[in-house]
Image (cartoon, rainbow, N blue to C red; front, side, top):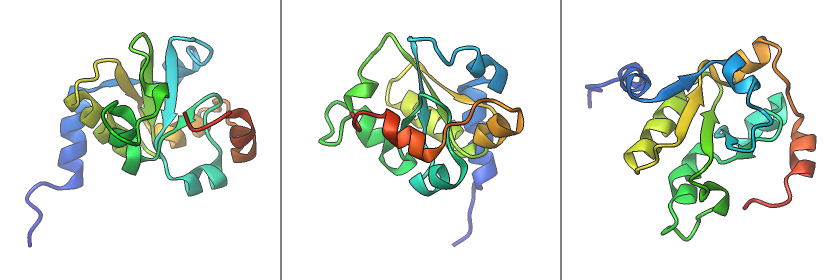
Length: 141
């Protein structure tokens, strides 16, 4: 079976339709109570590389289920309409697709970080170890 639309075309389409923030824009909002940063990477990536301080981890494979209040897997952290949810992944590809998927579900308060965690770390933005991340989070709500 031939691929008729490759990943890059999907990412490019998503990027044209979602809000994208630079690392500096998100760094400036790290302590803003109206922002929830969401790491959609696999837990193994967090273990090896760390994460953004204060973020919530929602693995890409569960994101739509955790966001939807009708899902048995719903996480209340996603229920605050006054917050903006800023997603990131490793390079910004998965988060662009995920942001687009959440928009398709009806969310208007969602964006992602250009370049993902790779750009975040490369630009010297603060990084939290996986151990600190685990100790900080009270629960997976």
